[in-house]
Every structure is written in structure tokens, then in C-alpha cells.
Amino acid sequence: MAGAPGAVRADLEQVFRTGYPGVVAVAARVLGARDEAEDVAQEVFLSFARSAVPAAEAPGWLAVAAAHTALNHLRSGRRRAAREEAAADGPLSTPDVADTVVTREEHGRVRAALARLPRKQAVALVLRHSGLSYADVAAALDLSPGSVGTTVRRAESALREELTPRAPVL
Image 1 (tube, rainbow, N blue to C red):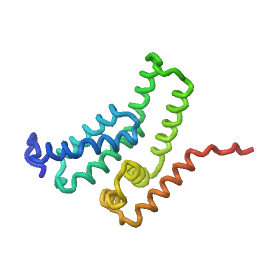
Image 2 (cartoon, one colour):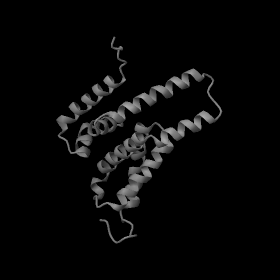
Image 3 (cartoon, rainbow, N blue to C red):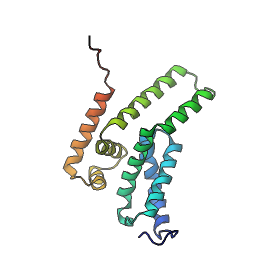
Image 4 (cartoon, rainbow, N blue to C red):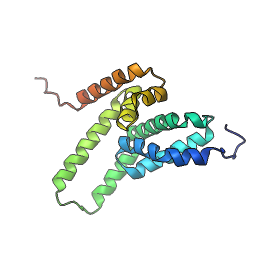
């Protein structure tokens, strides 16, 4: 599928047209920001364009690539830090600043906890909560359909554990 350097895959436009909304949705689920999700989608489709992935396997490949790429962005923290800095410098447009701060803080805690999960658990959780069926998650991650539920439950449990405040040890 990957041809001569500089050649464009014949199936790229069709895969892009059908896959773009899903890639952005998965990435936005992880990152919480559509503009960053669109950046991730661009990276994912550039990778797809250079790959030899058959078009028939593109939906699963794209979903996993979107989750992995978004988690990489999340873990790097570069974009998040830049966004928070820009938000601090801009005017506040919400009437209740306290609610906005709490919401951002909670979202940040969840994203940070998600970034600390084992990669396969984090990806399975993101894909499942992005609307993919157990069968789709299984196919995308090369898991048995029966193990998807276990993987997602473990991820949810680990995420809950990460987010539960611990009492200080005296």
C-alpha cells in the first residue's frame, strides 16, 4: 500500500472522509479539547498515509492510533501546559469562576490519572467509552472479546483508585 516516496495512497481520501470524525472523537475523549483532537487526527492520518494498513482494517487501526497519539500528547503535557497558560492570560467568560476552576481541575485529575494507567488499559477504556463495541475494541487491540470487559473493568477500577483521595498516614 505504501508506494514510492511522495506518492499518495489511492484510498487515503475515502479513509479520511469516513474515519476523521471517529478519530477526532476518540482523541477529544482523551484530551478534552477539539482543537487538540484535530491536531492528533492530523498526526494519525499522516501515519496512516505512510502505512501499509489495508483500508478494510483502517477503522480499528485509526481508533487505536488516535487513542495512543492522544495519550502521548496527554503524557507529554506540553499542549496542556500551553493551553492552561493561555487560559490564565485570557478574559474569564463564565459567570461562576469557581465552577470553571473546579471543573478544569477535575478534568485535569482524570486525564492525569488516565495517563498513569497501563497503556492497554487506558486505550481499551478510551475506545469503549468512545462508543466502540466490545467486538470493535477486541479487534482493534487484538484481544479476545471476552477479555475486553475485564480489561475495561480493571482500567475503571485503577482509575477510581487513582482518583480516590487517600487518608494521610499518621
